[in-house]
Length: 394
Image (spheres, rainbow, N blue to C red):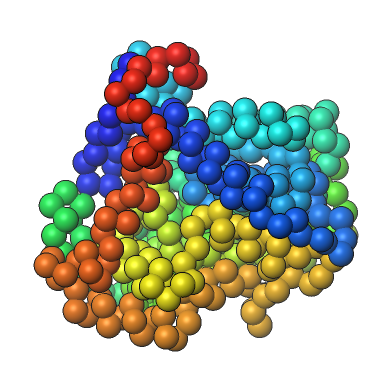
């Protein structure tokens, strides 16, 4: 089988196994080549990552493994390959991760099942009890368009604003033209359902299930990844359905601290920077902001990719032996570089002047597309994309 990218707008229907492995290997090599961090206390050694197969979740798993020397259990739901279709990139990613970290002597286990279901939680807990005993850290990085409940009810999230429709510049991902984009208002039901999918309820359910099974260690730490962005994108994020969901995530962090205080559980939300991920590129009008922000931060020397971002989380913001670094609301601000006034002023100025003719200069679309294709395992210069790969991950 020879695999080439098949792209339509923000969707790529193919993924390359060797390219996905190369992506994982490069992130691992980044961590391995960093100077060893001397921690003042023992770091978490048994880490559960819910949503582990791509983007921040995958990078968090790699960072925890190589910064902390942790054994990890990952949970994700990814499509297996078939005779007519490649697997999803996340399927190739987690297989590559398991292979590469095992070769480096680390313990790893990945469960490819729906994280929302109680049956998946029970299966994961059985693995924890038999192989690790307990979990010291839980990373919640789940990004899903829908949530199936145990009783069969299905909730679907909506990417919409509230109040009034939002109109702004957008990128036509087929023609690469700068166009006018419009985001419609959500109904009350769409807001409710989005919170059910993207809010903190399932994060809480995981912590409760682990606690009830005595699979959560005393003084365990748990972090849910979030994003709200600057004022420029408030109608998309903070004032949209995602904003309602992320507010619920934050409130859940406080509830977890209260309800599991007997165990000393510490729960945080981490506001991460904008990034080209499979979740973010599907958000209306988000890609053009992400592209412009990427270009501005590159020029300013403060751009971080996923693995650099996660390494900073584990070795600076959550340095073992020291208090977790948060803002006054108790939120970990990994978006601090992006939200600097100087950076946001430059982004706003570039967005104001952006058009189809200057899009490469102001938004760096070629770099944006490199990130896009890399997510699916393509455009790595050391991979022969004309070679047959049928023997991989059959």
